[in-house]
Length: 120
Image (cartoon, rainbow, N blue to C red):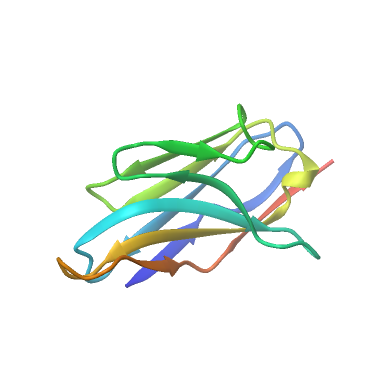
């Protein structure tokens, strides 16, 4: 199983950016998918998550600016980031709680990060 993130880059404050993550491999089902971020010198923090039935959760710092969505048929999760601020600068990581066979427990897989840099 692999999670491949894409879409990071450099954007000016106030701009928008979209990051996407695709899960591939032997996947039976995916429950929760999420985006985390880690800024230099800080701990990794949850940005947003979404369940298989579309229940969304956001960090207070991004509410109203970021939107998480997923395509269950394609096993992808996307984070649309608007009104970006310099403090949003971080490496963004996606993860997915998935199982590779029916009846086994869900396991959390992580993708490699993608860098988002917001200039002031």
